[in-house]
Image (cartoon, rainbow, N blue to C red; front, side, top):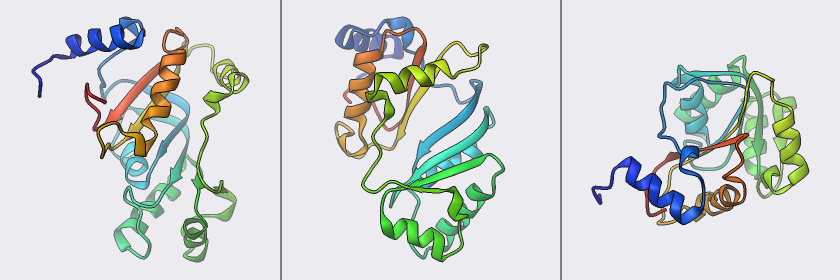
Length: 193
């Protein structure tokens, strides 16, 4: 590592991105994560998010199931984790983006078909739509002052582009100074990302 501490990294990030330094916080797994809907990507992250995060108090939970990320066809441990996710009383919906994934869930009886939303090809964040963003911010309970948007992925390349981090970074640059939105990053991302 560079020896740069969190504050130094935050100052450098703030200067480079234009995001106010008060908008950047270190991740705290014990921070209250009370919300109406939690969302993430990949089976392993979904499993860990609901089974290993005691601070998560989500009313409902949804995730996108992409190949990899803990999901393998015809693999017992993967199927077991999926069953435990789908059995959670907070589970609302799984999004599939590839026909083989959708068929696998149905044909193997892993998930109620009514809880599967198939969106071929990929997910486009509604944050690109200003009206959609305003609806999300406006739908919060009055006691929640901020909309929390979290990017969670394991990075395998220098920039995280294979996970869509460039898209998330563009959204942060566009909306980073809004006081009613808080952005969070979890995964193998560092100051060079």
